[in-house]
Each structure stands twice: as structure tokens, then as C-alpha cells.
Image (tube, rainbow, N blue to C red; front, side, top):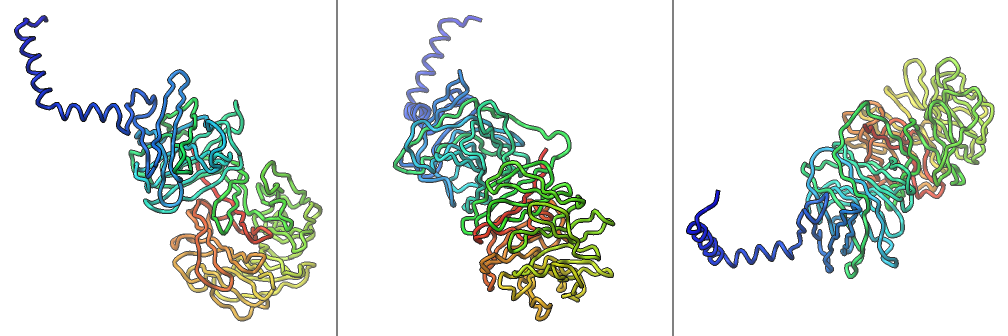
Amino acid sequence: MKLPLRLLRLRFATCTAILRLNAPFVLLMALLISSGPMTRADNLGLFEGNNDVGQCSKGGSVVFDPATDSYLVSGGGANMWFTNDACHFVWKRLSGNFALRAGAGFVGTGGNAHRKACLVIRQSLAPDAPYVDVALHGSGLTSLQWRETAGGPTREIQSNVEAPARIGIERQGDVCFVTLAPTAGEPLQHSGAYARVKLTDPVYVGLAVCAHDDNALEKARFSKVELAATSAAGEPVLHCTLEVIPIHSTDRRAIYHTVDHIEAPNWSRDGRFFLFNSGGHLYRLPVAGGKPELIDTGFANHCNNDHGLSPDGRSLAISDQSRGGKSLIYIVPTSGGTPRQVTSLGPSYWHGWSPDGSTLAYCAERNGEFDVYTIPAEGGEEKRLTTAKGLDDGPEYTPDGKFIYFNSERTGTMQIWRMRPDGSQPEQVTSDDYNNWFPHPSPDGKWLVFLSYEKEVTGHPANKNVRLRLMPLAGGTIQELARFCGGQGTINVPSWSPDSQRIAYVSYELIQ
């Protein structure tokens, strides 16, 4: 309907008066919209806004190319690590489960090797906020990084794939994980990096760039960016990752990932390969990762997760239940061969070699009681070392042969103990609110690593929230190395590197 000219003039005059009265406010809003830290959503494609997070001397920016679904992000900042972050972040608020995927690469050369191009999930825009990301570094290192609590430390799981062509991060409830495509054209695959971080909806999800140098500004291009809600479908699948953790940096590294169930890695005496069990067989895996190789163990094709190398590395003690259904201990050449039976009674589960290779220590059930026993490696009569009521398990010699460490529930909860090699002078090593299992002294005799369950967990089941913990062998403060989903199969057997600097273990995660 057409308004009369008199009414149109009246409306125009009214609007003009309002604008005059509110001119400072209108001008301020115009300036904020045109030059403020937030970019309007219609310039950001999938995302809602962008801004610097934390202290950045050089302000970042973003340019979106709708023709290619790509984003050119510039970012400064000193780091995204420790207790707070500094970067430029392009974000959208989302709730529920979702996946963010993109090709990522830096523009230009010569920047800091630790500069980062990231796909990020943050609780907030605060610099110390909890977060999870997949970070592509200038050096090509690609890793899952996360902060569980506001102002808490940043943790990391490094990928075994350098400079992948495409990266992804996915959220399923409290679990976030990384997918990678090693080369162009390959599909995204699970990297073996998983983190459990409780983030409250809605979260901020998007792209970030950090220069790792507050006086610099780095650029990264994110191409064919995809952000989509996901829904769980079908039965969850168990994902297994053989990881390595340095005891001084605690920067975990995913060496090998599979949906086949694997357990209990040993580290070879020369440091060149791992051994692990899967499906009743034993496998050898190069320490850098790759394809596992089956070890011939003859008729012993029901091996469990109790196995380990002799001090000279030539022989392999295995526990197998192919004959009669009860686990017995055998010795085979490390390269494979016909098993030689050592124990005549079962069940018997191997756990340790004496330093001179002459004696095996093991856990065995006799007359309804599980205790620690030893037996000559050449076979013979077994000797019972523990007699306390309840389970005694996981015996392992110290490198000097003066003690056997083991775990025992004789005081109510499972704790670490030690005794002399003849079973005398038992003494308690740990006494805390965890159930502590599988003590492993380091080859240099300085450290003890073990696995801790929450107090309410009975036994050593699989797929529980566990902690890998470290303490000086001479006694002292216990340090937490890592938390993850694990338990049975994680570190049942000795898993130290020969130089006593790293530990191998298996983590698990159920993913739909």
C-alpha cells in the first residue's frame, strides 16, 4: 500500500531526529562493526567470528575464499602450550558431536619450527581455557594437544605421520580424537591419538594459527574445510594404540594403531623393535612403527599377555594355554622356533628373568591361591616365595638382582611390594588410594613404573580410566606420566627402553 507523501515526510523527519540524538552511539556501532576484532559471519563461511586469543603483539586476520572453501589465517602469539595460549582463532559455537576436517599448510618458509596451524575445540576464548586440538607444526610434527582444566598443563600425543595432507578432529562425548590422511587422495584414518576432556556445551570450534614468536606473524591456508555434526551408529569399535612416553617430557607418541586387539609390549634389548601379543600370537614391530611381523611359536598359538626377553635378548619366555587350557611357561628363540616347556603345573604366568638369565619369576595359582614363584630357566622344581592370603602378582627382578618387586592385595588394596629373591624381608613400597599393579624397574635401576586403577576397581580389567605412574626406585615422590583408557594389556610385562628413558604401553578407546 502506498503511503501519502505527508506521512512519508513525517517518518523521515522522525528517523532523522533519532539519528541526531543518538549520533555518538550510531558512530560507535559503525566503528565496531567495520574495524573491531570480530569479523561478520557472512565473511567467514562456516564460522561465526574470529579474534586473537591471549596476548598477541601482532594482530591476526582471516580471508575466506568461498570458491574453494579455504581460509587464509594469519596469527601471531608466543605459543599454544603450558597453561595459556596466544593465537588467532576463527570459530563457531557448536554443541554435541561433530567433526572438523581440512587440508592445512603454511604459507612461506623460514618460520619457527614450532609454529602451529590447528583445528581447535575450546571451552571459551579465554587464553587458559580447556581445549583439544590437532596441531600441524612448522617442522611437520602433527599431534593431539589438550588442556583438561582452566590454567592446567597442556598434554600431547604425537602422530607417527609427518606433514599429513589432511587433518581432522572429531568429538564424541568427552572423547576427542585425531584423523589424518598421510598423502593427497588418501582417506582420513585414525591416528591413535585420543583424549578425554570434559567440555560443556556450547564449545568453540574452528581454525587457529600461532607464530610461536610474538614478534612474528605467520600464515596458514586451510583448504576444503568441512564442519559437520556426527551421530554414533552401530556398535563401538575398540581402537588399540601402542604408545611410547619419555619419562622426562611425557610427550606421548602413537607408534602403531589398530582395531585388532593388541597387548603388552616388550622393548627389545637392542632397542630396535617391540614385541606384543594379539589373537594368541606374538608379533615383532619396528620401533619406528610399520607392519607387525608374526613370530613363529610352533604349537603355542594361545599365547597370553605375559612374555618377555632374556637379559641377552636371545630367548623369549612366553605364557601359553594351548595344552590343556591352563597357562604354562615356555621358552622359544627370539627369532621364533619350537617352544621348550619350563613349568609342569598351571596356570603359570611369566613376569621376570633374573639378571643372569638363570631363573624365571612368575605368578601361579596353586590350591586356590595366587602367589609368586621362581623356577630355573632350564626347568626343574618351582619355589614358592609368597604365602600371604590374597593375590600376589607381577614379580620382576631389579637389575642388580637384589630385589623382586611385585603387587599384592594383602593389606586390602593392591599395592606395590618388594622382597629378597628368596622371598624373605617383604616390605610395602606404595600405600595410597589407588590399586597399583605391574611394577617394572628401569634397566638403569633408578626408576619404577606401574599402573594405577581407581580404588573402587577390582582386579585389573580392561577399558578403565588408568594412570601410568613413576617413582624413584630408591623411594620418593610418585609422578603421574599419563592418564588414558587402559588396564589389562597395557603394561603387564617389562616395557622399558634399554636406555631407561622411555616406556612402551598400549592404550585403548571404544569409538563408534
